[in-house]
Image (cartoon, rainbow, N blue to C red; front, side, top):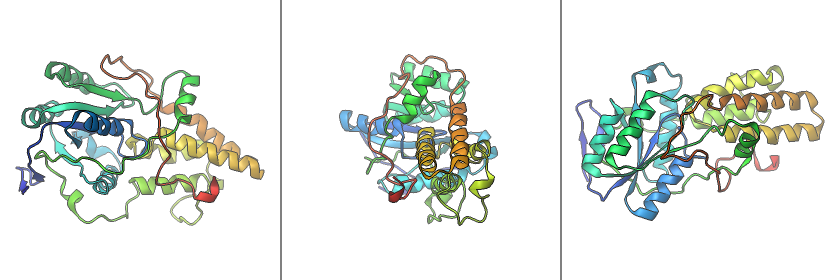
Length: 302
């Protein structure tokens, strides 16, 4: 397998295969607690073919804070599991059509976004025409409060230890191929560090306000950029917050416990306010599996 370069100067690799199961990353830039990634891997094991990790850039990406760091962290996490993030710019339908023509898409998996868009409907229509199963998984939970609490309290998906990787001639953003540097504030590791600090687990980050100075609303606003990118899942943050709240109550820190309770209440704001039904997609996913391998809390925290 030899590297080549596309017209935009992106490196890519070409190989032949029997088909691919695409995990289409959008605003779910993580490998932990990731229903769509788990489903793509299971489909590969069941039906054959390889898993292709894909990100399609849009013009709006330039306005999104910390997106580059999040993509780089994601690429690093995928590299640890034997694959890489394939980065493509341009029209999503054209991109998918090219892959399907050259490599045969066996299934397409992605997470819901906060608002229904024309692109979602276009991709669904394309998948029906092409005969490609298109699955859209919940990452914010259902609308009804009681169902939402059951969703966020369910076990998180464990990140896969390895992936049957596919390379199909898609460009890689140049910085993704460079040596990884853990310096940004927008990737997953930075987000977890910020979460631990906001919940009172870390006290030595000078660039962040002390936990005592943050209200529940302020903690939520601090974490919201990471939730918007999907670097952290809502379920991860909710479970970490509940754990911290229980610890504060047990220790008699009522003010801190009240602040975290306010954060827990704000997390329900991440639920989609309107969602069009998708006949080819699960309405709700009940997660199964173990907890994060990259723990938010140290072992002694429970």
